[in-house]
Amino acid sequence: MAKEEYPLSNFTEKIIGAAFQVHNRLGQGFQEKVYENALVEELHTNGLRVEQQKPLVVMYGGKPVGDFIADLLIEGSVLVELKANKTIDRSHENQLLNYLKSSGIEVGLLINFGESVQIRRKIFTPTK
Image (cartoon, rainbow, N blue to C red; front, side, top):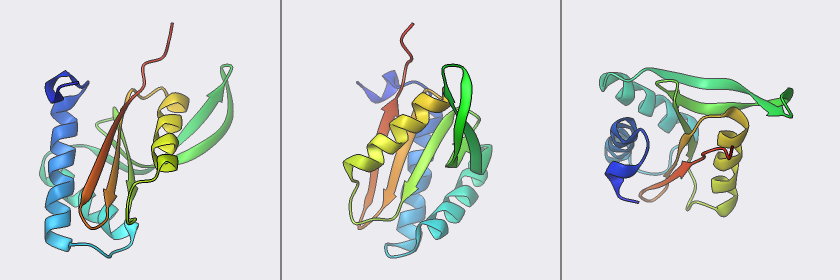
């Protein structure tokens, strides 16, 4: 899928650019929370509305069965899960996809602040 075909690419491109800006300024080796706070500052500078550590409910059969905390929710429509690991693991991608499925949010970004910034876009479109 070409970049311009991704849903909400106008927001995701700004988020990705901000993540690279944060990594360029801070480098590697900090805890995830440091990158999260810096990314929030960078996103605010770019004029985006950010909710940090956003509680979301997990629904099952139309009923709430639990909850989780999203690292960031941008403009109410892009869920961002942050990591500060050596590399992205398949379980991190599955975690983000499950968050999208359970929250009903369509677009998610997994951003890892390792040796370099690693990004995974995830799109969840519920079947009808």
